[in-house]
Image (cartoon, rainbow, N blue to C red):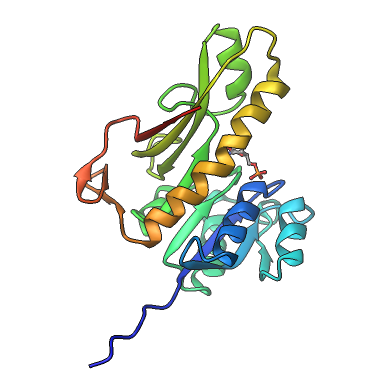
Length: 220
Ligand code: GRF
């Protein structure tokens, strides 16, 4: 019997801002480096560059404006409706700046990824680059991880490490880190759609083997 090739994975990307990570993932899909399609880009803010980029790439967009909902629960319920319309295999948070309810996170457990601009578990939350500079760190970086109910606390998949230079300021460090974001996020998405990474009892696995706490490491 002729075997049918599986359909490309359906990916929904959530953004709140510039959408540069969404764009590199979309480009990797277009080049068939990732066997997937971004079926929608959803933003919680109506006027962001991420939506503009998606439109230019011919990707469907939607806005679920958090200011229109009195509670986090109502916002999340509406966001779930908007996401599930696209029956995604994977949800990618790419600069999505909302804290999500436990119900939301549980619903997409094992199929929702986030990128965070630090070497997690260091510097969860905001202002990661300035905090690395203030601490005198010699290395900084970025992590792609599964999303769990702990903010920036789910199992790590891959990290890229960059040097911190003596004359760095927040801007120069951010830009060095962001170059690496654009390398590792498409890699992690590719692995996910190929079924190479998975989450089991809170731990990340690669090709069936448990990953170290850092995730895989890419050093510049
Ligand atoms: C990135 O720095 C990412 O690490 C953080 O938010 C930023 C998103 O950038 N979570 P962009 O919207 O993808 O350009």
